[in-house]
Image (cartoon, rainbow, N blue to C red; front, side):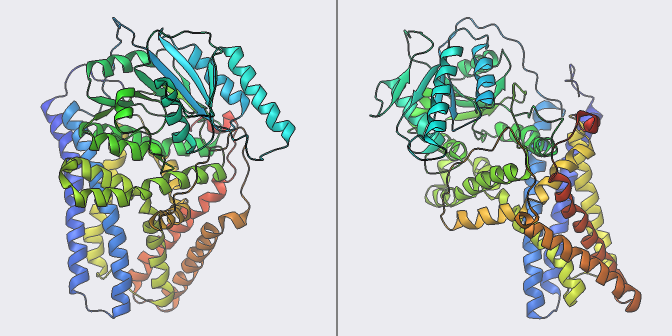
Length: 555
C-alpha cells in the first residue's frame, strides 16, 4: 500500500479508530461472559478444573489480542491512517564514525562473503567494518585439517574484502564477543584477543555508533544515512531497530511462512512499542549508540536472547529506543523445520527467561519504567506461553468427545450469540488492518500455521526457562534443508491422529446418540479444524519449492 500524501477524511479516520476499539470491546465482553458462566455453572470439581484451564487459555489470547489492538490504535492515532511513516531522504552535514560489526560462529563461507561485500559497498563514508569470528577453535567440531582450513579461509576472505578481523578467548557467545570487541575499541581489551588490520585504516577518532548485523545480512547501500541522521537528532536514543526480510522468501516454504509470521511483529507491534518508548532490540539490523551500551555494561551475557535482555537495561537506565519500519536489509530465513524449531526454541527460551527479571524488577521498583513500558515487557516476555494455549485449545474438544466432560459451560445458542461475534470481529480487524499494508489473508495464514505447529517447541522452552535453564547460543543452519523424520515430530503427529480419531468418534456419536447434537457438532468442528492445521506440518516438512510453485506466494 502506498504511503498517504494527505490526511484521511474525518469519516475514514473515525472508521480507523473505531475498528480496533470495537475489537477490544467485543473481546472484553466475551471475557466477562466466559468468567460469569464459569462462576455460576454447577459442575463436578474435575469438570471445573479442566474448564478453568481452558478459561485461562482463552484469557491469555484475549489479553494479548487486546495488546495487539492497542498497538494498532496507537499507530492509527499517530498516523491518522494505517500507512507506514515515510522516511525522507537525508543529506548529512557530518559523518560520525560508525563501527559495522558482524559476529559469526562457523557460518558458511559463501554467506559470510556476500555479507562482507555488502558492508563494504555501504555508501556511508566514515565506516569501519569488523568481522568478529566467534568460531570455537578450542573444541573439536571437525578434523584438525578442516578447522585449520576454515580459520585460514576466514582470514583470506577478510583480507580479500578489506575488513578487519577480531578474535578472542571464547565466552558468552554473541554477547561475549561484542562486549570484548567494545573493550578492544576502548583500549582495554582482555588478554587472548587477536586483531588483523586487513582494512589498512588508521583511525583518528573512536567510533561513536555501532551497527550489529547477523552473518547473513545484506543491507541496502544507503542503510546507514537515515539511521545516523535520526540518532544524531536525538541524543537520548540508545538504538534504532529496523525490520528483517528473508531473501529466500520465494523458494522456501519455511522462510516464507517465518517471514510472514514476523510481519505481524514488525508492522504494527514494533511501531506501537516505539510510540510507547518500549522498542526492544532484535539483535540484527540495529544501530547502537556506544555511550548507551557502555552505560549498561554492554550486552547481557546471561541470556541467549541478549538483545531483548539488554533492551530492558537501556530502559531501566532511562535511554530511549525507537524503530524505523522500512526494510533496509535482506537475510536468509530458516530453510527447514529443524532450523526453524531451533531458532524458535532459542528465542522463546531467552524471552521467557527474562520474565522472572521483569516481575522481580517491577515488584522492587514499579516506577523504574512507565506503566506502558511494563505492559509491553509483560506482553513480550509471556508471548511464548502460546504453546500451552494451543495445546489446551486442541485437547479440550477431544476430552469432550471421548469422555463427555464439558469445558465451555454454555448452552449452544449462547455460544453462538457470544463467541461467533467475538471471533468474527477480532479476526476481521486483524486481517483488515494488515491488508492495509498489502498483506493477504493467505499470506498471514501461512505464518499462523507455522506458529501453531511449533507449540511443542514453545512448551519445552517455557518449562526450561521457568526452571532457570539459560541454554546455549546456537546459529540457525544455512545453506541446506532437510526433512525431519516423523519421530522428530511425534507431538504434532500424535495430536493430529488423536484429533482425527475424535472427529470419527464424534460423528459416530452424532449418528447414534444424537444428543447433545449441538455440543457434539461444535466439538467435532474444532477437532476437524485442529486436524487440518496440525497436518500442515507435512506440507512444511518439504520446504524447498521452485519459483513456479510460488508465483502466488509472494507479497
